[in-house]
Length: 335
Image (cartoon, rainbow, N blue to C red; front, side):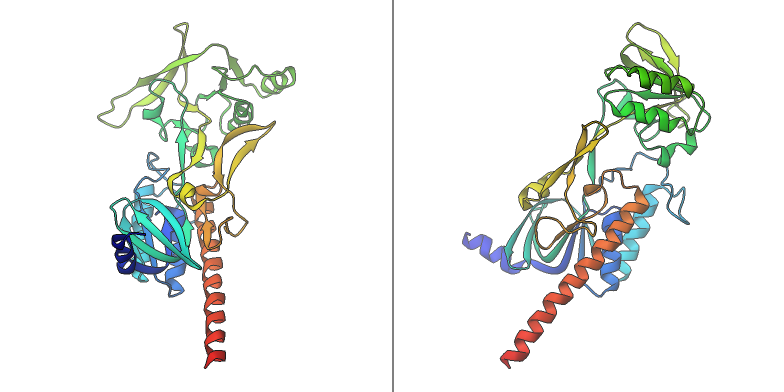
């Protein structure tokens, strides 16, 4: 370590816990840690996964609240208990001693922490269809529990890019009788699967999807998908399109810490993405580092992510209590 690096480390602010990510999981964890009288810093890169969505759902007493409003109120609550929130990005973190981490921010500053809570979420890699990314979170959807009720009884298309599409088609049929499975680049259903689709009244559309037809005025905010365009030029009426993105954990800090990453596998072995391997309470393969929210569970909804942050915070606080007790015992014996 150079002289400059040593001086920087000496001047770095120190916290009990640095929370990496300011979404529902990170803020919930920070709130609980603040109430436990811990010094907490939340580093928020400002890229929440659900930002394109108009509302968050299935969060008891807050159903329908916008993601931005929910996070703004969460930041205020954390600060009410002495927690700090900074708009920045963690670009690296490393252990610099027993029970101590150095966290480097995108601004060039660095801080120290006794424990880390990784709640930086995931990145959605969307299928390469023109116009699809611009509709993501509005009428291009993934989670039926998040958005199914809002498109109930409408024409819903399911874009097949892999084996999970069959499961999606059957699941979304719960919200509408008008569901179509667009085979696109996905596999041909088996005879048994065709029978299931037919029994549930789900139409199968051959051909590759080349774009989306949109009706309404974007300026007024009332533009909506009206159809799905096929390679042959045909347009199939549709009001919402369901896709299966690939989910990948945000990588910079994961790599620098050497955290174990697992693959998200469904059905017959299809890989949908990656996440940080963690035990039920959030403890990871690196001592002193916990993970919560979509970083540890790609399928966690807002309320589930918040619960994961709370549970991890409880474990982190008790881990610190045990460390402080061991130190107190050593000091008493040495006195």
